[in-house]
Length: 333
View 1 (cartoon, rainbow, N blue to C red):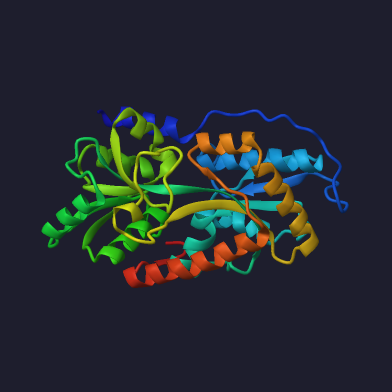
View 2 (view 1 turned 180 degrees about the vertical axis):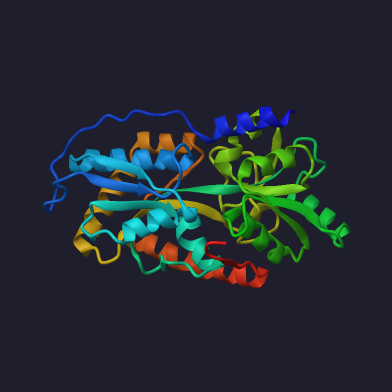
């Protein structure tokens, strides 16, 4: 397949079709909200994060009867948007949609950050998670995780090659975790994004890769790539026939990326509870779950306390993985 055609397919598969939402305005509780709410998405428009952003906007505007304006504030791998929200008053009128890649992994891998995301925000609730998929080219002889491990051991001197969408990303760290669990020597080839990496997997220039599910759904459906495992503890709704890593012998191998809502540090507990309850209520609707499933997400919905604990445990986990793999970056370089 030609590189240009592949890139067009990748771009098309990354952005799900828009959806509509029937709004039913309801009276706000506890005096919230009395004016429009801003929801900052610290990434460029047009990506899968926008699907969750639009959904969160609809859930909150329906619940509180006020417009919720989604603002894309990309830059510095999400830090520009993070800083904007961290500096806002903790009154619930400036919120942030972010997750593992923007809140946890930088703290685990990057030195000199201008913001400590573990202290600068109030977790409100998890919205969704998406799995990583272990992928190979369509005609690869590798069919199982055991096949991959066996080949990697045969080629232990040079190492099997894999790609990532950048140093310190969830794909890079997932593979580092895999290497640590199996004792394999693997050759990392970092790219500036997912598209070129996936083209090289398809063309056989890389032996394998992990990938977030949303960017590869279209390629898997078309048969350009083949998935041999998912990294979650459960089988994906989108790939029900693909076994988990744990089912293939790597017990307790459970890696997902996730998104949720945050506010600035110092929000009143009652306000956090009000927002968290609204998010959970909205996420429980069939429409919300369908919207996220179509985009490649596994719909969630959690309490603020559970989401805060997720942030804490994931930071500790990925710090350890990064340190063992000697993954370290300096902010701004």
